[in-house]
Image 1 (cartoon, one colour):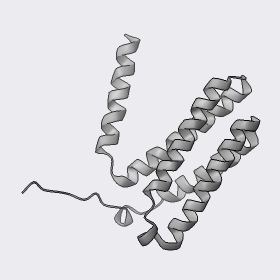
Image 2: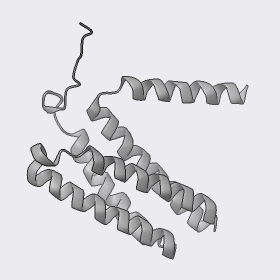
Image 3: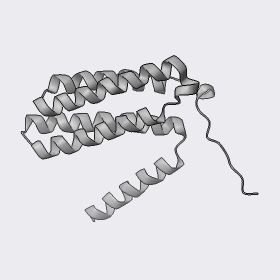
Amino acid sequence: MVSRSIKKYRNANAESVVDASPHQLISIILKHILSNIAIANGAISRDEVENKGKALTKAIALVGELQDSLDMEQGGEISANLFELYDYIVRCLVQGNLENDTAKLDEVRDLILTVKEGWDAIPSDKRIKPTVTTNK
C-alpha cells in the first residue's frame, strides 16, 4: 500500500512538471535545490557521506540547469549576473561538500531563497509564456 502511494506521488509530480510553464519549472528547480541542500545539511550532521554527496550532486546539477536556461543575448546584464551568481553557488556547494561546511550550505540556501522569492514575485503578466505550436 505504501509503495502504491509513492508511485501516485511520483506520477503526480511528473505530470505537474510536464504541465508546468517555463516560469513554474524554474520555481520547481529552485525548490528542489533548497530541498537537496537541507538533505545535505542533515546528512552532514549524521555523518552520512554518501547521502550528502548525492544531495549536493543533485543540487549542483540543478544549478547547472538554471545556468543553461539563461538567455545571455536577451537577458543582458541580468543574465550575466545570474550566471556569475550560479557559478559562485556551485563553488560554495563543492566547498561545503569537501569540507562538510554547513555554513557554506546555509549561505547557498539564503542566496537561492532570495532568487526564488524574486522569481516567484514576478507578476503573472510579465512571466515567460510557453510557445504554442500547431501541427499544420
